[in-house]
Image (cartoon, rainbow, N blue to C red; front, top):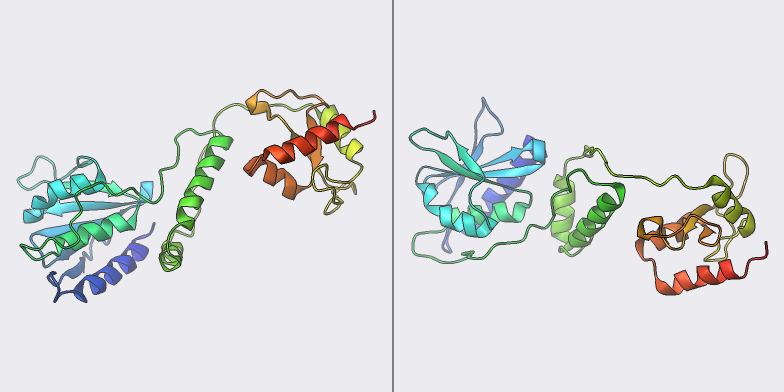
Length: 271
């Protein structure tokens, strides 16, 4: 999340709110400090509301300054938590802040800030779930893959216009994480035997291997019908050879019907 990206989002939000200035909202003005460019804020309502990129965690930091601190209970309910801390803590006018990873929460906070006194339009009194969950700490590969799949599922439920907007505003530099956990050392003889028995044909879809490996062999991947992580054994009676497409399908869907086909393939072998 870069400063320029957040600036574009906030400028667009400024225009959106001001287009409704005749229907219960005051006009707000976007400001950005020249000396510290990440310090971006809105004025026009009561006090000031800051929205800054918190790049280390890829989040937005929303802070209340001056009389905007009257929004504290609203922000607590919106984010489902007390503030994460205070800027200028210990000084005369501390600024409570929250860190969120969903721009929709930023939008609701700014709309609330821009409400005219006495109006209730767009009031939020219950926590709003964030569209994306935070990356798991010290995750193994399986946990990380599951987390990515769940976040992609959540993203796919957004309206297309919002989905494309978020994609366009996303940081183009992929985040790196360090994976932890254990790994299984698979028996090479078992894997090679399963591929030989398949004779270049996928055990699930029965199509020929999609290409040849660097060793000029039909490319298939060994797969444990009962996953090792679920207690399966690393033996020829539990291993099949799949094309990359079917292998990925089994790790995403793991349908019982497909599992039964593979069990039948194992049972029908002659060796």
